Length: 345
Length: 277
Image 1 (cartoon, chains in turn purple, brown):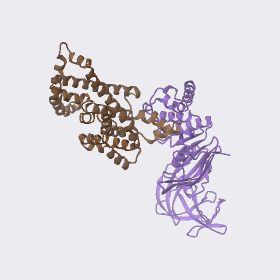
Image 2 (image 1 turned 45 degrees about the vertical axis):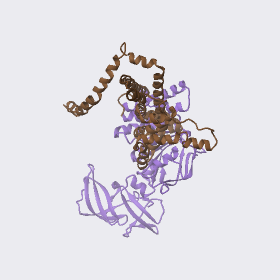
Image 3 (image 1 turned 90 degrees about the horizontal axis):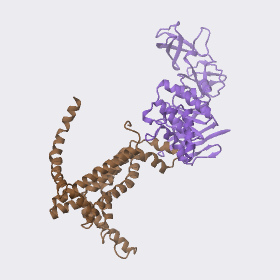
Image 4 (image 1 turned 45 degrees about the horizontal axis):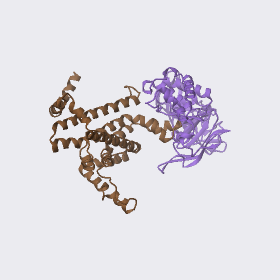
């Protein structure tokens, strides 16, 4: 049963540019779902619709069976962590965290107890009296998280919360966020453009492109079985060829016959494969073979990576360091049917 | 070395200030401390005189109320302007300082036309039958305050808008997300964050109103004198230069006290300490 639902959400800026086009998303209670995509894909807009900062032109946002589309931000009771953290500079850590509770008019004792408790969970107990500008990026990040969590929100929204931290801290913080999220069992929406960050933290990932969700699945499935060419490209596939169905087999534009294992159906699909899965074709093989010229060779330590120019375009091929092919030579690439992934174009 | 060369830069300004401001000021003010039977007796007798005291109280009252009204009107306006797009922000700021481009005498005459017994407001009120006789609006404290608010509001708006421009939208959004409605979010977050600008604006408006001459002269008339018009009267009409010097020093002290007061208020409300950006 879906806990949070976005149904047919349309958002337009200035009556012209459509940012979200009939977006649908269902999130189960307690799940951490990431919205992943390049800048301008609408992921932050989606988050802002959920938060209530943007009212969609049409569509329904509901939580726990309740339609919240027209409910103003301050009545939604969602915790939001902003990219900039948006800590109040005139308040110390304690007062920043207590802000939401004061707005709810809780009595002093309750506020004190809740604030102390969440500061402890976030490892901030010793910083109570500090002001935000006296703290490091990672500490500020935790204050922002504590401030969003202390109000016991029905939903936690994180807008690229780690993008301002350095690489090492980022890895620590994402473990921390995951730990706290699981501990409190809070349904979470996480916006990011960083694939690794997103895969490591999420229960499910929604890959977005131009205002729609291209694929919504577990990180494992997205990584192993991307559904569309966009998703495949976004998660790092670089080798693509167009395959047109003819009877039981597929043919490239040049007419080479390909057989595939994938259960995806369609008259015209794209095939993709990782550089390390491409082999060199034996004499006898004539299916799933591309002939090409070796271009730039890059030494990667354990292996060489080659750019191979074929009739289907440029392919990246990774071969062990013992095998060396000179630039300009002709090689035949074999794309094993078990490794070839079919995606919608 | 660097400090010394910086010091050289302020020498010309310092010389002009010393020769044209500090020296004449001291020459006028120091004798005023010794006039009369005992030191400061001129000041004591100033505050013993009920008429003088009334002028003093009126001056401070007008300046305080003007500052207050400018804050109440200017701060929300400044916030609105600071949230507009770059283009509109420029247009609105130019519009808000537009009144400053006309001479203050002309601006005060405009108010005479509006507030006078045969002025715009009274004509409307009488024609509509709300009042029988024209109200006395002109030549009152109220007229001075209205004129001064009109005169100094742009200063408040421009100063505060400048500070508010640097407050990101995320501050308001964060406050909203934590359960504050727009008004509370403004009062609890935007207002305290803009205090430095509001304090500077307040000081500018207060000192401006306290020392303004044309507006209280034209809108207050001779019966509603304030310290600045009173100085003129003592010096020019009566020839009492010592009396004028006494009032001058009182005005300087009030101004400094108010600036000090505003600053310590700011320090109390803004506990961030000295290391904030």
